[in-house]
Length: 105
Image (cartoon, rainbow, N blue to C red; front, side, top):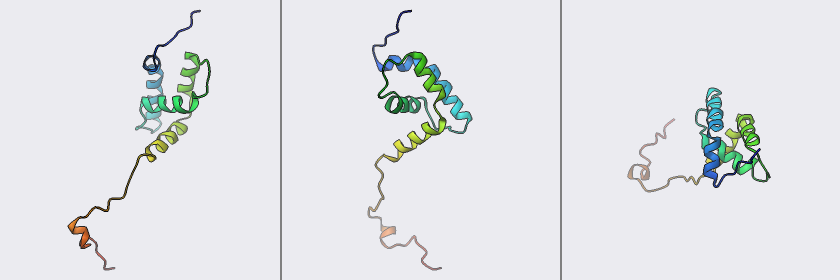
């Protein structure tokens, strides 16, 4: 049997897209409606497959379909929490005078 070789990650991603789509739909049915195919790919590529050697398409497809939904969800939530967020303290006339607050109890 000839080994299949890929010339780019995009080509590999395209080949695995049916499995990624299937996993996304399964996760959607389980309540993870915000998970996208690229989230599943990114988790596996950055976490599970980072140190792997000689992965076959079978291994990768199996990983896609059998990775626990909770783990993918936790990965995505962690990535979203890493985005720079800030508290806005810019000047605003209404807030300068604290007019919008009801301080009476």
